[in-house]
Image (tube, rainbow, N blue to C red; front, side, top):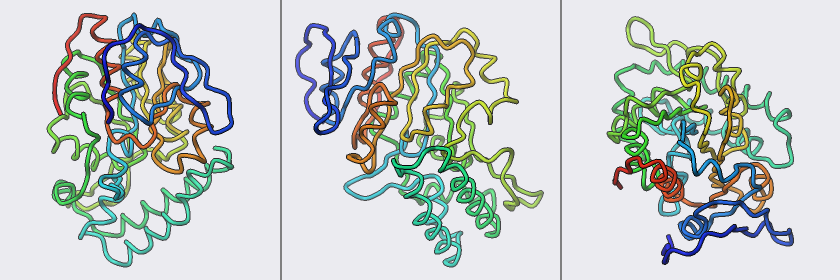
Length: 323
């Protein structure tokens, strides 16, 4: 991470777009230069979120988990998603691991293909998740093994995670984690990192164990990359309980994460921050068109924490230090 440098007078900042493309539309942030210096890979998209977001109380944060709150890579090596943690564990047979890897190699390129529409990707994602769940349910996974699997994994949250989770908790800001991963795994990761606070609500694919503690199926509606929207929350009272919290910070790493706030009634302002982790050159243009801020290969939460600090200080709230 580069130095933030001294404070500079507020002015709009436009980061460059893709090679040969015109500069992105200036975003009227109240604190642009310090934020821009927080990451060499930061780019600003269209001005969808107006500056009034920064002068009002932040109502809630909605975030993806895998590769958004968790790291994409560390020291040049890929970090595991919540599914990968199971795939790579000793409780999965070699045959199952081989089949899961084949699914990954077939479907992941489809998931991130910028040439395909979301509508074209949808049936492929349903097939991928359904096949993966079927394979896992054949493995006689026991509930007590989840904590051990997470403990023995290489799961890592992004640098600055303690500041992020603790600041939201201490300021009573709800955090919805909306994940197409495995809820039991990601919840255990957060617990073992000692940042699972009462303000957290998780919507994800949760395992359903039988009376003897063996995985038999997955609960509720299947959640994959491209159906993270109100359709899987329609029977939930979560958003109704948060009426009036209409200023939203949204964090994601795929185009499917952009719809995570669709179930929030009466949204006034929404700031969308996208983590562009893979195939950066190929996906940059579409991310800049969709997200307000795009972070390229940034394995930290520095920019997010910087924005939280700015927003909360305007509201005379509390920033909690952490690492």
